[in-house]
Image (cartoon, rainbow, N blue to C red; front, side, top):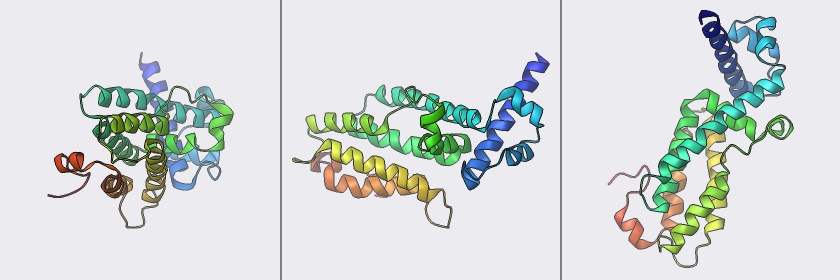
Length: 208
């Protein structure tokens, strides 16, 4: 058991070090030597756990993939209206990514060409499709303004999610990803949510 715990700790140290380096300079600009130096492990220990930098990246993608189905099911099971579920789920996901470097690196890698080469992404969440479904159900329940196309809103919000994470991760003194996502919702909902929904709900990040 002590040997197993040491092996788990070594693997975790490699994963965190890789996530920090990928988050700092990007996947392509990170040499294996930087991961070894940051993690404090030998090359032999690295290859005991991972066949290559690519397989390590695949592990990061799979780690973030496994987080989202649980998050989705928890929000879907809360008994809220579908528009509130969409908002809450996106906000929590963005906050988790902002706070957890392993999630943040894995999410970035999932959009990288490496994702198509070395990992199956079917276990994750297709955010655009999920948002489109929630917004379609919102429209059916009269929670969106007449004439609003749910799929278009889903595409806009999904693109804004990616943009918020990208800009927020630059850390140039501006708002982080979670704050930017709240801004996206505030602007978007004023244009697409029904007057009845807006009158009974507080917009993300708004102060009444």
